Length: 128
Image (spheres, rainbow, N blue to C red):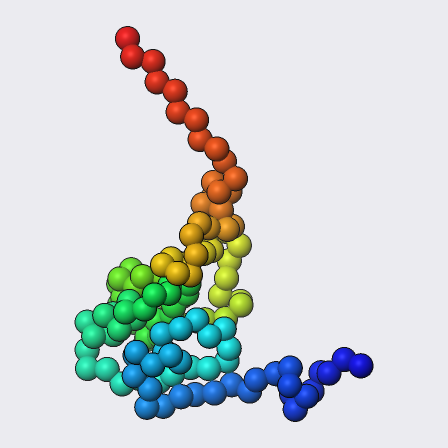
């Protein structure tokens, strides 16, 4: 019999964690669950430093009412993908490369970068 009810153990309800630090496991590990730590910060420099202070770098998101400022911050985050004002399956676009950095993986799938993973380059040069 297939279990399909949340109380049967196949589902985890979303959790918001308040009071965690950026070094707590819930904040700096790839959890792949519906859990989000909310951490107060002093300034954007501190946020970027904390965001990059991890061994992982699959995906990140920046939430802001100023999309230009969000883009500026996104360029400074060490992650394979950064979404601005979204972070869900619908945020993915198969025309974009997908993959992580650091311990989150090497290489890319999808997009031109993903296709390049299947190409063996062969450079030949003849000096005259």
